Amino acid sequence: MGVVSRIRLLLAGTVALAGLGAGSIGYAASAGDDATVANFAGLSPVAQPESLKKPDSRQAVADAVPDVMVVAAYGLILPQAVLDIPRLGCVNIHASLLPRWRGAAPIQRAIEAGDAETGITLMRMDAGLDTGAILGRYPIAIAPDDTAASLHDKLAELGAAAIASLLPRLTEASAAPQDDALADRTEWLEPASSR
Image (cartoon, rainbow, N blue to C red):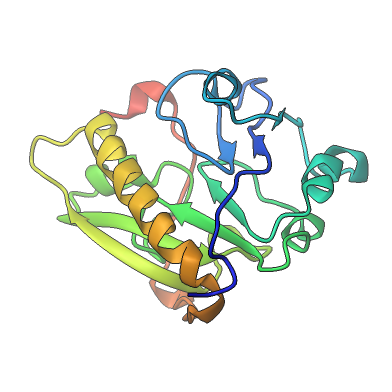
């Protein structure tokens, strides 16, 4: 077992809800206001900065002195200063088999494109948009009757299991660079665009 043998949540964070919708640093919630969900689950403190670009806005993360930061559906690119805070780095739980469907709305794009499978990719975060080295890929078939919501729920469970498996062995995990020539980039979709 690696250095990360006991996992304890030090801080939950979410994007400020001003028009971006809720995303999360440190935990993922399937519906509702993430800060409320985290508070009900006893996951405090909860930080909701509008941005992490200014030093004072990222102070809560620095004060937590995390070993690792896990990011899921955050919706913003983290500045390098934030990526440098955890001693073991930042790991993203991405809802596609990277490098396919980098960016926002990967679930909807996979369905829209008629992909037979999608999955979860765990990657070491870097300054790019979903361009970090891959720690693991976990495929799942897309059923003919899957919707964005049903596939989201399947991927949320798969992502939770994948990160729980990775964290205890993170210090020994190898990461492979992505092939940028195979990358597809997605753009944000309005809610009415998803099925």
